[in-house]
Length: 260
Image 1 (tube, rainbow, N blue to C red):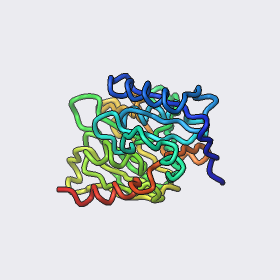
Image 2 (cartoon, rainbow, N blue to C red):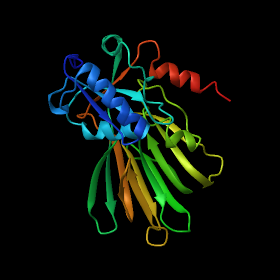
Image 3 (spheres, one colour):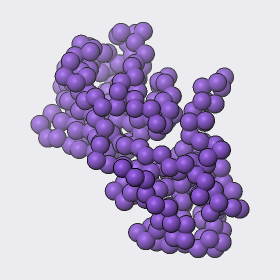
């Protein structure tokens, strides 16, 4: 499938509510013009990684390239903020196509809840007792019982977020992989997770669900008291992120792995 056409005369600027982002939006809109997102060819998001995630969700069905500039804290998914030469940067930027995860979480009443996750799908224990989970890949049980605080499945875009904090691997943005990472595993204590192909279907069943209740979260959408969670790539949904050609996401991933 071809990449979306970039139209530099119709740029929409969106910003988080932090003062630095609001001021940057006013400055850039005054300099380059501002178009309503529904009419724009490119969206420039000003904020941090959290705001970039919100922006991707907001325009998840619109197939508009989104270029982020960091006016937040970490900004791993963002480009460096500069006011000069924006159109030249957009012209030279690389467009990366990503797919979110599709989650179907079945609760204790048998109701199925569907959500999309750009970063990760996470399962968490709801009370003081550890969760007991069974993990299957493409219908084959790979772990009969994982006792833990939780487990997550992260996309490459989300591998530098909560997944990294849980000691999961960083995955290059174009790699056809998902990170399956335990959260505070108790048994088996030494299991540190797995990398799986992004074409697989992952099923996580909650054992002793009444005694050890578990919630499932797709980015920011939570379903409580789940008994089964199914996760796979949302093949029909595409998002387009833009990165400066001289400071690509893959370069940042590589650099991050050599930090101490």
